[in-house]
Image 1 (cartoon, rainbow, N blue to C red):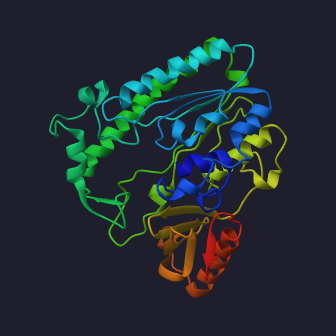
Image 2: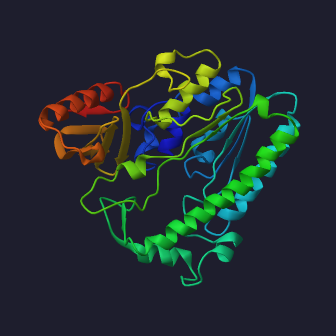
Length: 352
């Protein structure tokens, strides 16, 4: 849920406040008043979504942002089968509004948890020397946890089969998305469509003991944009964040300044900030081309307070393991970036 709130609002968890289902009960709206879905509706689009996020069912009022939203429970035994139905339901929606403008949001979950009921291609393509129960296979690969169960430390040898299973899930997603893309091609709608593929985080099994949870492997997510107007394939070296997607959407309608939009559309070139607020910890990563700055401190969930005076961990990693002198000065510069970032929050108080 924190990631989707950031995608739709263009804001970080410390700003929109939706970072933990238990703690965030006092937040009235799942996303901020200024959000991508509301913006796109005002531009005359019909909005349709399918979600499997446990924070997006009717109890949280997420459906109010859409003209039509379908919620699928993230159940152990139906995740793969559900994926196949998403494209069909989307095509039905597009047929109903074939002469109008459509915004579609699809939330696939099968590649997120590749240890539930397997798909047919997994059974066909993977080696037979494995557990019959993928969930047992996953649990057996966990050596220990970091601060919480969202930080599994995995056995490197045992995790190989899980990575292979995840690859098969992604191949499967390629097939189910192919149904939708084929429809757009047959209906000659590719030239009128922009498609964005992204995720909430990288592989969750890339954790190591005594290393930050928010390492580059976990933070690097797929971001692929198909834009018919952009004829050349471009691979961008600049870092981007899920919070950059909403400004990009606004830019497509000439309603965002280029300095706030990622290349090649704009000129934004600022440090990338990623946050995790979970239980009693605030964790942040600030990335530039040459460094990754990590900072962990106490979080008071009762008072919504980030207690930067109770520092737990601070660290800088260097690109290509190149160490530079005067690290304390560099840390001080990153701390200033962090402090300016946290000042923008309206939901959380900062205790120095």
